[in-house]
Length: 141
Length: 346
Image 1: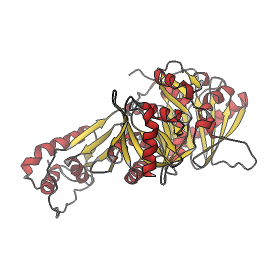
Image 2: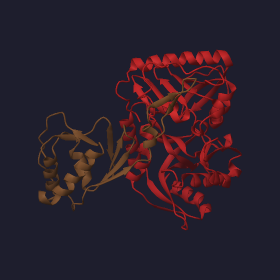
Image 3: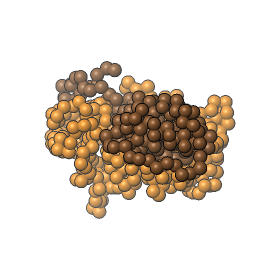
Image 4: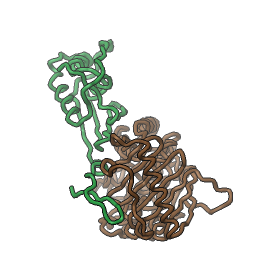
C-alpha cells in the first residue's frame, strides 16, 4: 500500500466542526459525515500521502500498535475510494512529521455515513429528445 | 452544485447568454412586458416579464417583495422572464451540445447557466452585467417548484456573492430574534413554522429561506409553502390561497403579504424531528448535524463558490447556538417553546 492518495479536490469539499467532518461531493450530489478516528484519517489525506503512512500516523496518534488499527483504517480508506472521495495523488508524497503530541483518546473505528437525498437533482440522464419548441426532455431512468 | 462539467467555458456560456437575451427580446416584442420592482436582502431587483401568463405564475410567491415604482429606483439586478408557448417562440439553438448542461448548473467566468429539465426551465445570470434570464416552456403549466420558489437559481447565485445562501428551512421569530428551522423533508419544519405563524410569531418562510452568514440574518425570498395536501389543509386559515399544480402530489399555499417578515436576525439554529406521541421539547443537537442539514442547499445554489459557502456556514454555526426540537403531539406549545428559546439566547 505505497501508492500516493489524497482527497479528490476540487469535486470534494469538506468542513470540520466539533470533531466531525462534513464532506460534499459536488459532482455526484452525495454528502457525508465522518466521525471518530475517521476524522484524523481524513485530515491526513488532505495532502498527498500513502495508506501505510496514514496507518502509522493513526497508530501513533492513538498510542496503538499498527497491526491493531490497520484493518479498520485500510477498510475505511478503501470505502473513501469507492465513493470517489479520494483519488490517486499526482504530486510527490510529502514527508509527514511524526506526531509530537500525547496520544489521543481511545481509538474508535472510523465512521462514514452517506446521504443521497440530493442526488436526484444532479444525476439526470442526458437529453434524449427535444420537443417542437426546442425544449429537451430527460430520458426515463 | 457549483462545479461545472468539463468543457464548459466562458465563451460558450457567453454565447448561450446572448442567444437567450435575443430570445427574450423576440418574446417581449410579441406579447409585451410588465415591470416589477423587488427588494430582497438589500438588493434591488427589477423583474421584466413578457406575457401575462408568466407574470401570473411567477409573481404570487414574490409579491411580498414588491416595491412601489418610483423615479429613484436603481437596479442591482435585472431579471427578464418569458415563456415559449404564449409568446409562440422557440428555445434558441444554444451553442454546443445539451449533454453535460442538464441537471447541474454551469459556471464559467461570471456567467452561470442551469437547465432545470424537470421544470422545462432555463436560468442564466451574467454577474458583471447584472442581468439574468429565466425562460419556461409554458407558463400555464408551471412546475410546482417554479410556482412556489420561482427564480431560485438566479436569486441563489446572485445573493451568494454577498454571503447569503438559500437554505432548505423555515424561519420564525419574535421582536428579539429568530430561529432557523433546518432539516430534511418530513423532519417537522413546516408543521413547526405553520404552527408558529398561526400563533402570531414573525415568519420569514416555510421551506426555502435566504441565510446571511455574517452577521447571521434570515431573509424571506418567498411567501409560499409547498407541502403535503393534508398538512396545508390543516392550516387553511393562515393560507388563504392554495393551488394544486397538475401532476404534483403536493400543494402550494401562499401566505398573506402582511404575514411575512422581510428579515429576522438569527438567534439560533433548530433541528426539528417529529416524535409521534411525544411532547414538544428542546433537546441537544450537534453543530455537525446542523451543518449536514444546511450543506446540500448552500453548496447547490451558489455562483461557483461552494467551498466558501460551506466554510461560511460552518463559521456561522460555530457562533450560533444549535438545538434539536422534538415535535410532539402538543403543537400548541411550540410557539412558547421557541419564543422562550429566542429570549434566552438573544
